[in-house]
Length: 227
Image 1 (cartoon, rainbow, N blue to C red):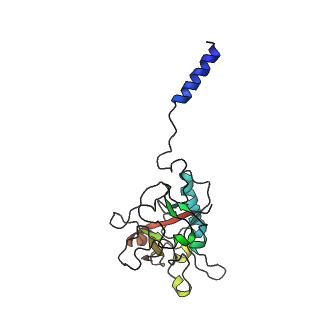
Image 2 (cartoon, one colour):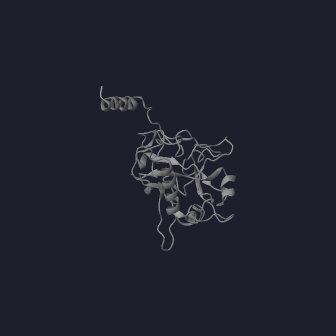
Image 3 (cartoon, helix red, strand yellow):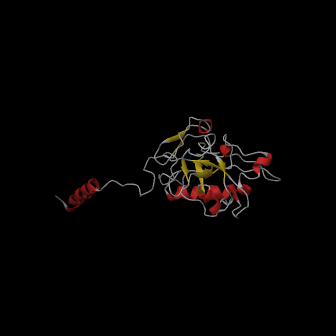
């Protein structure tokens, strides 16, 4: 056998014996089409997310860190209209669906299904970008409050009701500076009428990080891929 042929055989056998590549720890498995996640952490300044643009950038950053940055990510947040500022509804920002979590589990097939009793959003499916379950009611610490600023149908609160639903359109973070509407990703709460809502359960105690934590949150929010 010639030297060249021997080398070719060695290279072929090396390729056959090489172990299959595996995803880095915490990243979605190859082939998983993640189009939804709950943030593993907020920006760290309470409900000051830098407005919708800052929240979107945070979604994009977290998705990119786990290899899903090839999609366009948007935060599920509403903003209230004012002079020179249009009203923005969370339901209009997330694309058309369907959406799957980091494990490939279907969350909802459409916007209509997402805002109906048919969605599959629970503590076990509302995973963060790394595919991890986030603490809910009964865990320490409880982190089940999710910033949305939205009504159950995914729209912004109108008129006077808008004053304390978005912490000044996601820029306030000082104590006693307002409130934000939150949902419960674990569908659990004290009020049976609203406690099970994933996107509109109650108002936070305030906009600062400490005030968000007092009502069972940590400045987390939902991210959806629009493509």
